[in-house]
Length: 255
Length: 54
View 1 (spheres, chains in turn blue, yellow):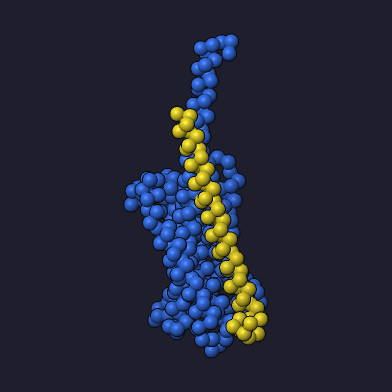
View 2 (cartoon, one colour; view 1 turned 120 degrees about the vertical axis):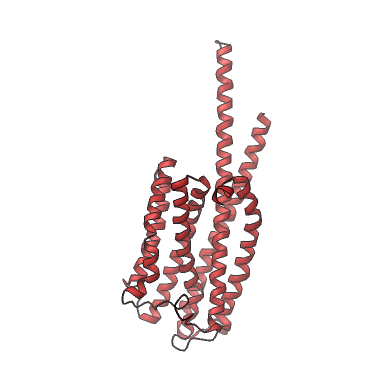
């Protein structure tokens, strides 16, 4: 499947269908989920209205983790099979993942203050998520700091793959160590710990953020492919002009 | 503040969270659209020029 869609023309055709579907999907899921989360869902019996932050915090962190898994997977494909499209996908996912991780940490801090009395604690879940933010930023920094395209691709891919070790740590940190952060409420044995009236807008918001991530990555990939094609055309045209000029100067030594 | 946005003593925390989320997601969307338009326009311009060069 990877090699089938590694063809840029097939990929562009796929994008023509996926981009509008994901864009509309994101809009139709996020907006109603936020409206329901803010105004329609009843307040939590312990946390009161503050729990409404869940509808922006949880989707950001979950989709940021998925973005990192996507980045590591695309880096693996790019490293092993040297698919340039996989490399483009990894490059496009990194800034989106970094922004979502920042959003997750920021909204988590604002939730932590009224609930724990502190914006930040050096808790395993929070610290491992902060490490994920640094991994995203490190990936972006490597890509922009090393001028040799092949070297930067390979070093960044290795960094992303090693960083994937952090993903299970983020997920299971609340079970492995004693933590202020609450344990898993959605993906846990025995079903979700949240009432259906509160969990449905949350599922919608998570799905909406996932659609938005897909939309942003595909749009960035298309832009990158267009920029690469434009660069290749300019290089080819300048090469043609240079060879014409040298042929002319050989034919007429006085020129 | 209108009553609809009054969530008790922690209203400011809730509204800042939603506001920052809208700002960051909106900025990402706008930057992505701008880059997409610029890249497509630039490619079309260069393709036209290279076609004219033969």
